Image (cartoon, rainbow, N blue to C red):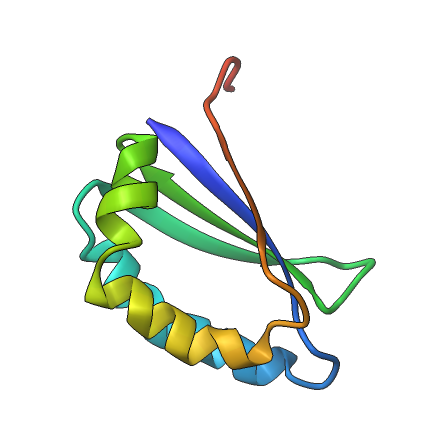
Amino acid sequence: MVTEIAQIEIKTGQEDAFEKAAAEARPHFLAADGCHGMDLHRSVEHPTRYRLMVQWETVEHHTVTFRESAGFARWRELAGPHFAAPPQVEHVYSVLTH
């Protein structure tokens, strides 16, 4: 299991619209092959900064299967207009949990 962490900077004043877009796109993530969950977090110190965290079976489920899907296209269609810059994405795996 890997977690995709996408740091997303949103245009000032579009935070509520972005959150609504993410909520609308959520079912597309959850329906994706290999997806085991999706969370969106907003920064307290930087209110236009979000971190999208998606649990995938493998990196390829994200980078190949999902990115080539209609669900990914819909996510970008909904959320993309609110991006201030391209998201910064990395994949991590747990080495210590509680």
